Length: 255
Image 1 (cartoon, rainbow, N blue to C red):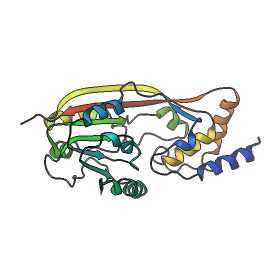
Image 2: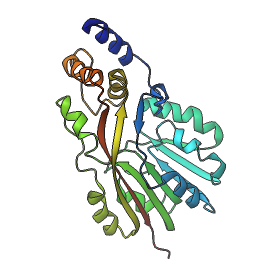
Image 3: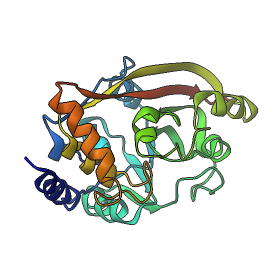
Image 4: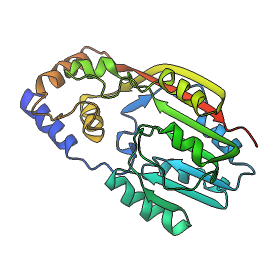
């Protein structure tokens, strides 16, 4: 395939729709090594016996829906990205879930009363206001989060002349804050793995779906980098890049 045909094919990839946090379009073309800590299993364990759960930055509600057999009587979610907020509302509100528009950052107040939730979850969300999380968490309740490390995929971003937008987003940043608000640390785990792409078109779709990775990315503006990556594929190389995650579990002391 010549250069013009490759670029035309990649331009079609960047026009493909992306809804919620669903990468099923890349099935068989993108593979990420799973962190050894089993966030999903721990969520199921923690949901047993609780009466209320808050899922922060739920995206389109995809992950939360996978836990539906274990849902407690009271369930609320937050989401700040308008397309995902609409999707979460369509999916979750008919099931009795309270869906609240809240931007993910470290200063926003959560619109819930003190000690409202027995379990607070946050998987791959944005900035976390630990003070507010501690406030709305009930005594004896648990906060569980699995996050993308702020320095994940640095080797991929470097190829496109980009740098991490939030390099400080690490467990080391949040642990002192967790201690200051009086939460007891139960577990903290770090993980380094690989995210691999079978072809350059998969990278195009990925970068368009997550626009903050390479701000301003388009096939037209980064064609030469994409062509270089294609040459690597033609040489039999696998397009793998370094991912980093961390998991934190903390508990609010009982009264």
